[in-house]
Length: 128
Image (cartoon, rainbow, N blue to C red; front, side, top):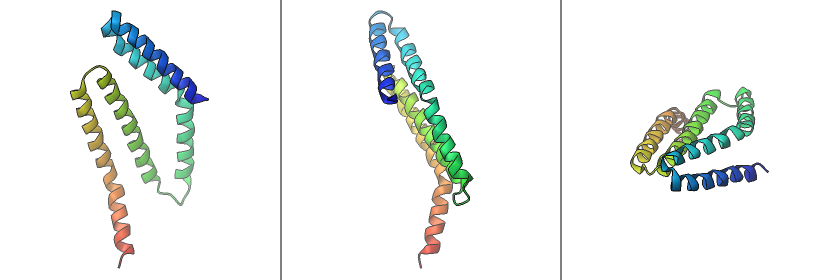
């Protein structure tokens, strides 16, 4: 199972990080970054299959490809924001983490505006 491998990489990274924090605290963040990147690279096949499925959906004439593209962007921004926030919190920089989180939310909301406009327009047409 993929999740067992991901958890294993995570626990291995955790152990290395704990050891590094005792002897060379400044290197612990690098262990976290490298462990996270290994998990991301390990997950690339799954991510690729998800993107292929979404591309198949967007090629279908029944779905608006612009909305699917927006959903992909929003999902990507959310994942990257959460990853950056976690790294900042692991480093003890909660203030920066909160600002990154806020910025990510603002960007997601700004990307969501066309979807909200279309939804409200459709609802207005449906309601008497």
